[in-house]
Image (cartoon, rainbow, N blue to C red; front, side):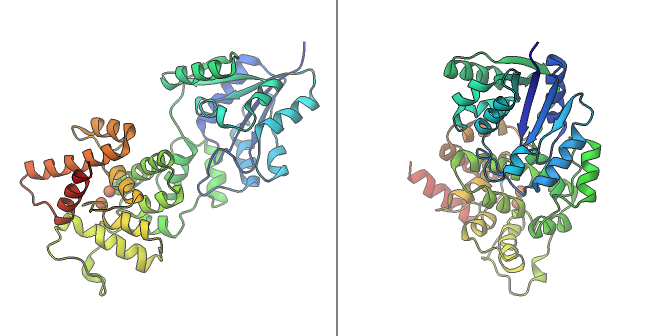
Length: 375
Ligand SMILES: [Fe+2]
Ligand SMILES: [Fe+2]
């Protein structure tokens, strides 16, 4: 019998319970002689937000995967530095183990982007693929179908029971001082002991000034904004900053800021967008005009918004915590065609305000006029 090796790579920034579930499912299925967990150095197909150092990710992996038999955490890619490419790693693994049966285990998210990796065919020459799919994940079937059609190879499919978790979400929770639900206890202790994923100045301001409920909303807006920014090829770190700070002034009194000014007749519910823009610029030193604009018009919108401002406006409205009637339709529209979805959000707001008999701020009217005319 050839030696059986299961390879499981990822950024593991940080490793979470789903990573452990995937590795455990692969271990159960293959009973490998070696299960190699390998954190990447700088991921070529993933942009990282607030990344932990390689040495810390290695240590967190050792803790997270310690309960799995025959596991070894490899520093090969981190030691090599630079960008990590799976085709190089798998080639090396094959060279070192010419006769082994090598299985590359991955979750649906990884397999979905497989065709965008460097030299995917070369990877397939050196191993076979196992898709470890979460039960109930409807996207898995299509991902598998696309992979098999594109590469003419069958992947093993292994089901496991788990939840939809992302490292990004874990990190954002930590940085907003919200309890991250899906980090193994030992990893969480390591994170706390080593002050990883601590709030930076922007997140720190939000943690200090927003109650938990509003921080949960802020997390939803950040995650939604990241998704939209990825789709629309907008700088993700700008989207994170704008989303993080969009409601930063929600509970602050503008009268405490002597130099602060805003247009006349601003409704009370709208004040915080102007104060938020002011604080971002003056107190927190944000210099990027798009970010300031996104914060300053996230409630009312305005004519001629930059793409980032539209993203924050939309993300604020459709983030996963929103459950008003009609939100599902708006979400679908936004992800089908962003511009149309943005306009639908704007129109929805105006209709809602009209129904409630509330005044519509002039910036919103300008926005409606400008985006409708363009049609
Ligand atoms: Fe707001
Ligand atoms: Fe908000």
